[in-house]
Each structure stands twice: as C-alpha cells, then as structure tokens.
Image (cartoon, rainbow, N blue to C red):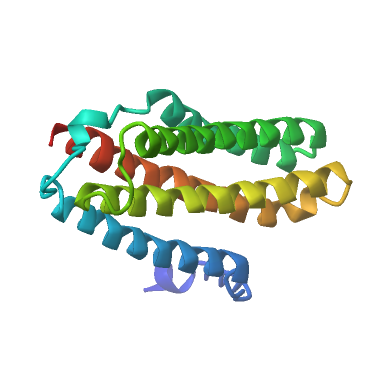
Length: 203
C-alpha cells in the first residue's frame, strides 16, 4: 500500500486556452463545400445526358484531350505551393516569381479554353443551343472557366499588392486562402477532364 502512496502525483497538464477557428478558413471551407455541391449538380446532369443528343456534332467527333492545358493547370498547384513556402521564409522576390508563374499557367489554361470554344462554335457549329451535348458541355466547362477567371483575378490582386510592398509574412493566411481556392479549381478540373474528355469522348 505504501508503494502507491509514495508514488509522485503527475502534474496536471496546462490547459491551453480555446481559440475559435480562423474565420477566413471557415469561410473558405464553406465556400468550397457550396461550390462542390454546385459542380456536383452540373456533373451529374452532364453524365445523365451523355449520348442522348439527337443530332451532331457528337463528343467523339470534336473532343480532343487537352493534355498541355491540363498539365499547365495541375502544375500551377505546385507553383502556388512554392510561392507560399517562399512567403513563409520571407523571400518576397521568390514569392513574386512563383506567384507570377502560377498566374501565367492559369492564363494559358484559360486561353486554351477560349480557343477551344472558338473552334467548336465557328468551325464545328456547336453552340449551347445546338444539341444536348452543347448545352451540358458549355454549362459545365463554362462553370469551371468562370472559377478560373475569379481565381486569376484574386491571384493578380495578391501579386499587385506584393509588388507595391503591401504584402508580407503577416499576410500569409490571406495568401493561403487564395491557394486553397486555386487547389479547389484544379481538383474540379480532374473531374471535368475525366467526365467530359475521357468518358464522353467515346459517345
């Protein structure tokens, strides 16, 4: 019995004060969740109507897998991560370089989308009212393109602020939230690429 009595009593761990989660992170997670649900609706609609067009052009006749543009967009997730790391280390110049590269890669992807639409509309005769394929294609791909545009605007604002000397290590969370949004845009493209260009291209 004495051996239990003589054992030292461990000190109680210091309780850390509870801190509410960052309102920026909560807001961005809420936005991403909402936008994910919106994209899910458009993806389900696209899949449901695959192969149901009564007239051409059909997906297999005009769709080509946009490998280069896709690699550019996926690669921008890496460059924006490198930019974040540079900002954490206080290297503003390197941050600006990686951030600018991210913008350039996103702009290239958007330029490809514009070129593709121009070809489909003026050479292939596919508009949003041509057939079911046209309606669902432009709706889904256009929804994604609109998010890329928003992302590029946000990225540009951050770069301009940095070039004007108004962005430093203390603004890392602001930059992190923009990066989260950009990663979300990239992740959505994985789904769009798979459904639109890999699956429906056989119909």
